[in-house]
Image (cartoon, rainbow, N blue to C red):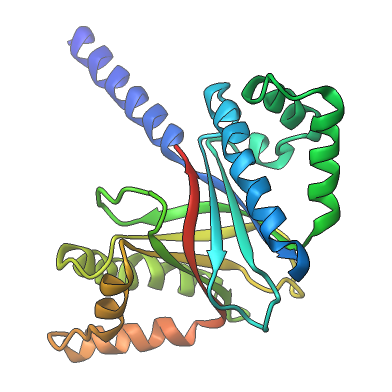
Length: 263
């Protein structure tokens, strides 16, 4: 009996540890680059892919994406989104210090001199502006085998829960909208969906409280997904969807193409 109890306890602890390890924390950096320096910055982010791969190999991050935006809240407000993935909230808040990035650059590009590395970073800092950075935790996602690779599409939907309805909104995303997206994935109309809660910035003046990521393998799947309408919903399901929509304000939708990925 004691051995059985010990076995059950060990399985429970293992499952709890596994669940904790699967939690994802992400930093979204919305980047504005001066128009006359876009090509220079594209070259820079290609270099940075190798640098972040060194960070992945070192266990500092669990992934890194670089997205090119097709649309946004205002013309030319942002051109790119950089997403860095962590498995721990402390690591997320500590981020990637400049001295650590320089160290990884030395490893990735051993032929560059110290002067060249310092100049590359300074040039990158001078050419970009980062007016918005979001620290987020993934709350729930769909079950799928979607592969992140250059060329896939995503819409980043910034949401703000209606005041006093924070819990209502989260329950709607998890219990109402997630099954809808899961059904779309099973029909081949979407690749992946995830729902994230903002850790920072906080407060009533924050632009958003949540974010959803809707991913598609190509434009054909994206447009087919937009045209999809579930005609099999009953009245109760339609009411649940409307209640969910009324519990949040959709601030902005950013359509983006994945250019660089580290996994």
